[in-house]
Image 1 (cartoon, rainbow, N blue to C red):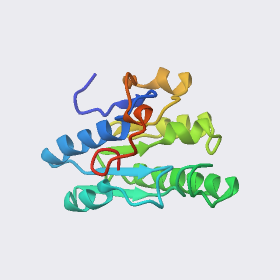
Image 2 (tube, rainbow, N blue to C red):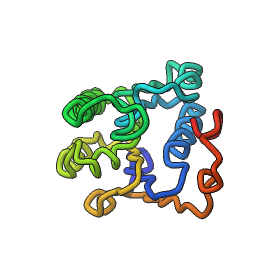
Image 3 (cartoon, rainbow, N blue to C red):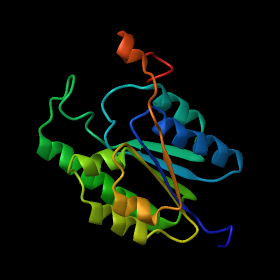
Image 4 (cartoon, helix red, strand yellow):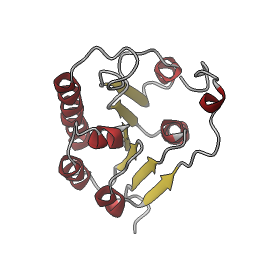
Length: 178
């Protein structure tokens, strides 16, 4: 395979670090002068540190929080239809950005959750992967990566949780978790 061709990367599993691993790719790619886009399919209404740090990496890195937030937990005040519409709009945006060939790498953050929650179908995501320009790499994050998508990937890493502070009653930490 030509080294100028992009690859399909999946970060999945129940352990923490999937988005963080994708952000590691961002740091490496920006260091090479590549243009990277991250579209977040679930996150969208809370503040988290990467929103501010992403601005420091512009113009090479662009991050779009397209979701309505986590579904059915904490302060979710959106109905399922709103969440699905946001996910579908994010997918349309991803297609437009991919077809533009403006980006070397496109990260679809938490898209696997969007599939698992039935906000998107496996076929919609497979179609997006299929239209990927050969020079563009695509990264899909989130737990529950479907087998059909794993099969078309070039690199799949599963994050495995061994121990988590939440199990000890420790709440999410600023700078570590958000």
